[in-house]
Image (cartoon, rainbow, N blue to C red; front, side):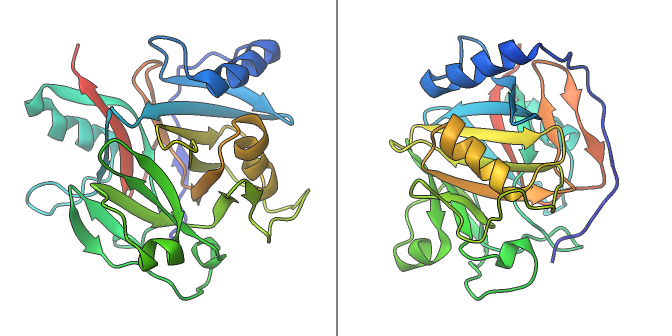
Length: 260
């Protein structure tokens, strides 16, 4: 269901010592340092970049502009935000999409549902059930298993369905294999139990599902987490000047802030 693409990256990050990365991971347990949006950490030899947003911040999903034209890139999102006097603090791809960049599963943007939820099992990672929905509500964030979402849909200003779930109620996805050899650059999101924090993670090295899930469960201590994608995973971070380049994306999630 999802398309594969060659990815080129433009990164100005400098690699920090392993000890600093470990301290950063501990800091995320209590929230980021003042002014920090994205930081780095290492878990079991794999480097990750972590970006955090709070429920009271302007976190949005993006797919198309007002005319219905695909945005597809971080630059296009920033161009659309510029007339508001705003810009992205960070952003990443946010869910799987078809070759025409249409979302594979549920997609809600600015309160408008643009694609229905998909519940039956299917091929690929999206169909590795249980999968889930990332919901941005008024004053609350959530990662919800798809059938639970369909049974009692919450009020989501923005929502995107993807899969598999990485962590479900504090437990790893039951089909993850420790030491599994399916390794790719991957990205996802996890949400705190009180719904006030979301931590977005992208691996800088190839990682399997089990390790990625345990990062969320054991290091970040987030009870629910959702996989966004692999191979095509990309990150924008204004704080470091990083903007990963590649073919056009489907859904994008980003933290919006005023321009300097």
